[in-house]
Length: 157
Length: 302
Image (cartoon, rainbow over all chains, first blue to last red; front, top):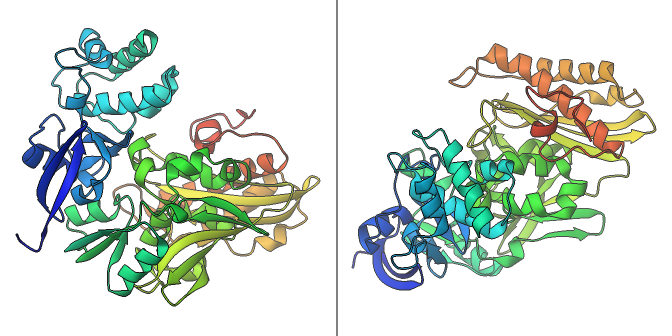
């Protein structure tokens, strides 16, 4: 073991993953390359675009700019943790139905921010939805259909 | 490289005495290191689980904001929103929900950016930074703390544990407003904070500080001459003129120096106006930028 690596246990979507990671690894890289969950995307690697959004103890965090070793002992939720087996989460069904997915790269991050928003604010106004998703960039859809999907989910849940 | 996860201030100070550097949310440090702008310290001590750093409390005549209080907490804390409203204005503008969830006021202050949003509000409210080592603590005014872009007078073994702010007098209000080109993931083009106390319709004290127009956040000098003046457009224009005069802006990707010098006056005038409205007891919702800001009707006050 290199002195620059540390053994940590990361709890991802309720499963404990004992991993050996370089101290300066970002969480998104470890989730994708070590844990093997590639739903979380790396876009800007600069805390700007939100493609890497995961939940840490229920709060959205940019995982590209968060040290993996610092996440030990926190509950990490990735987009893979949204669905219940083969049953998609209502947010996933609605974003598909609304046409809120085009290239799909921003979708995992959008879903995680939306999930945290609805957990905290079950009946958000459109303004609250826009603020809740304000750290997530989408270059395809123009946002309107994504916001509609979140609004529809709030009505259903 | 090592990372220690601390759960008490004593743990943090012991690690720092041995050369470790503190990390809270990492939104400045990790981003900077990944971009190659800063070197990742060899030894880090994570301070985000130190609960004693994450509280807002009243202590005699002062309000103490723990350095580990996140921007998201500032926005929902009644003491901050009601009595230190400009700090809440600033916290609401920082980054995105994700940035606000992990980014802390101590990190914002100690990162020392001249464009930091919480800096100008803290300065006009008279905040000091409480710096601790394993052998003692001291309080440093923000004017003495910030020595240049990303530079502070704190020693490497000193941890900022709190921002200590005198209890504002009755009939006081404060506001922070910034020029921004978009509503999220933005950094101040320029910004201004004002804190103002009213005696009837006239001003009994006023402080104004400016964001992103000098190597550090700076306070506008010479406003004592406005004590006793009415809180009206003429007075607010005098504040704007002083802000334009004292700004030392640079030109960069986001704005030219001339544009910054002009708009800092606009921000200072609006911040002073909003602070006076709050001081009079009316509610201007947080953040001022949305109710009272760029491109909005200044009459939009409720």
